[in-house]
Image (cartoon, rainbow over all chains, first blue to last red; front, side, top):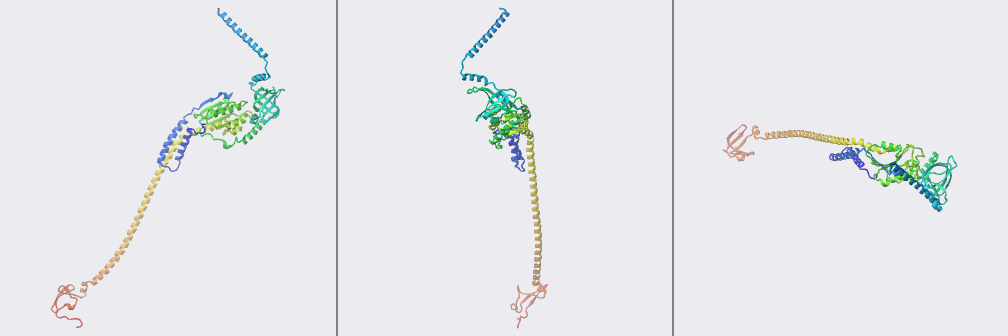
Length: 67
Length: 428
């Protein structure tokens, strides 16, 4: 079922939030910071692409259910 | 043949055909009437005509006769002396939490049927709706208690909804305001919505809703959540959502179920079994759309926040490096100063010590000088002593001399030459 696995967006979002939280710590290695920023930018791009999809798809199923 | 003639012929043919058809039907009826059927065959034919005649009948319970697995009761017309013998399976009553009692006003759905064994006409009840509010409430409480004891409402079995719902299975009536309200407040986030149109009240509602839940579970695996929703109503109109069949379908659903039934105060059995309950269809929509709305807002700030934090870290690092540099310099200077101080102190000590030593040496030197001066032969000569030499040798003793020796006598500030006239030792 779709609900058993997180959607790709949910996974990317979670990872992005984790990267952002990492940047909130007091001290971090600058080289690692640059790597994390690169990763963060990729994740922002992926998430933004999904968030730009605005049209909902509406499909009616099994018309006989209503009878 | 003229056009008119042709039309008349067509009409004639048509009427002729109709007359033929009617004739054949009459012959068929006569044949039917003349058939000799067994009792079973006749009852079967009657049931073939009767059972498709589904109906919803309103009446008052006048007599109840219960057995283990089924109940017979009479439903009488409120105004006329007409009754209908009804049959209902006990399970059906239990699933609705209904205890049939004389005087209860009911709306029953089902079909008529002649029971072969007795030949009596009975209305086979498929759905029951309680009309009286009091009776409905009693039925609700009874069913609620029974399902609660079976663990249907246990909090530990409730599943959380996915953080971002992509695909929704919407179960409601196409004519309901609930559908419009839900879709309007859901917003546009590129979601996939599968819609199953069902009756949300009336005799067919329970079956429809159960079928829809089963359909999604078996055929639409990508659905993240099932939304079961309808607008507000009285206890009677919400009855389908207080049935054990719907509760069982929700309980057994592999897909999490979110309900938004009626208003805040309308808590149904289905709400209690559901994984998440929203108070209204609008609230249900907001539960699903809020995470997306938040993400749209947050994505704008997250990138900036990461950059700012990185820049802050660089600035902090720089500041620390400068501070460390300054600390090193300070420490070095302090050490240098201390060394200088120590050196100065040492120099001072050395100078003092040397000076003292020098004084001591001077003193010793002076003493030695004085001693030397005292011991100096010149000093002796000054005192009146003389040095007598015979040739190159210094005369230490009278025994070195003979008469007529020529002697050199060194005196203070000069010398004399003399000749020995007499030699005499002490004691002679």
